[in-house]
Length: 118
Image 1 (cartoon, helix red, strand yellow):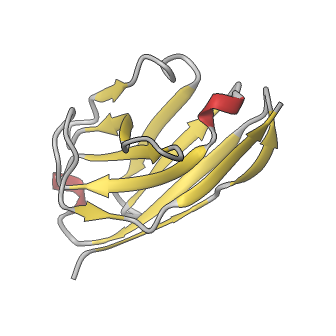
Image 2 (image 1 turned 30 degrees about the vertical axis):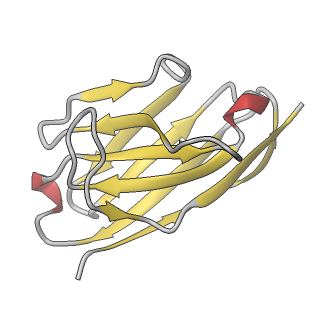
Image 3 (image 1 turned 60 degrees about the vertical axis):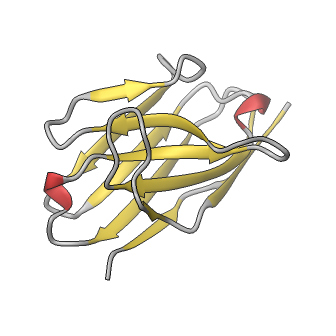
């Protein structure tokens, strides 16, 4: 059974940084595209960043230049380094696996809350 466990959310002031982690329990992790999505209250879940099995990355326009996605194929983990955080980055962040560079896959983590205060 595939499991994704996200961690690292919290409360931070605007301009600060956070690093999200997602541990993926699946031996084929290195073959998967993985990514981070977020959902704000009353809004649909949206793509934040993805990284392919070949380590190509994609970012939404709203986070490009501030966020960085990476993966560790030895530890079966994916990370999201978030810098220069803004109040509009406040959301529940979800890790995802098995999709493409532009679309989510079937497997989701439980979500971790990120709150950015002004």
